[in-house]
Image (cartoon, rainbow, N blue to C red):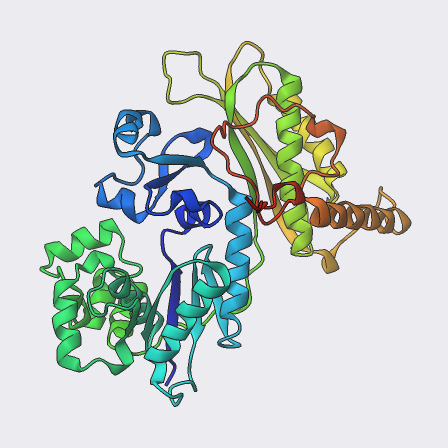
Length: 430
């Protein structure tokens, strides 16, 4: 019988910010969205104050002063690197792992049940190693299906069935699970969104226990095979395997809201070139090529009192490519077509489409490949190699600009402690 564990980093973004600054210990910390807009992550201290997720930061300023709340801009480079390090640690506990999100991973623990102390002790070892090696706190949920492992993790986080951050459903008695499931709202089940939750409640299904005991065939008729599968998983029947191989993306998007309104075409060209560079790097990382590119621009839709304009255009490429230069040239041609002067642009973005494996490349009858394609790959390898070693943007196209006044606001950005030499933490003796 399969056994799964769901390991989740607690308050991940906020915990990453606290990790390198001891003065933040026990202080309330929030992380803000792009352009320092809304709260997207909260430390335990902030949650205790009753501050909800998604509240605009400008509405919190007075309350933040009263409670000493420290706000940080989103430091994606730091979070991604610590996430990768956490996955490396978890990989030492099982060869079978699925990275579900930046702060969550499923582990298959089949065959580890016979260890001294059982899976509960094994879960405690996982927590301790992540804490010792990375300084991060995780909770571990264990169950015979992925849905139960996810639910066990919720119970561990809320201290509903344990007090040590590990909840193991494989050792819990049926009566204890019945009592626990009766206390948890059905909306806490993985895959049950608000719309489905409302429909279930209208049917009298308000708790996890009631959903588990519902007629699985009826759930399929009323909802979908996904809800039927969820019911069976809650009963301990594993219907979902680990996805150990990350599926290649069929589209790659790159976009950002600007830190200030942009009125001139050259600034938009810089932004679009920067977005293409990021997307092209992801494209090459999965060894793929893009056969089409879409560019869009828009004004601020949240300010209807100002003139509005938005446009998106997609063009097919004569040859699928992952060369940043080629993709940038086409993107800027599209941008010049759709740009209209006199508007204050709030956001721009690009999407790489018609993505195919690089091994399936087909050359145009009218464009010579061969040596030119080999030179392109070599140049992009050098670009990625330098940026991988010294940091993204170390080597870039001139089209991306230098000062980049259009970039999103990140006035409270912490250092990139783990990915840039200049940002390494320094300890000085007194």
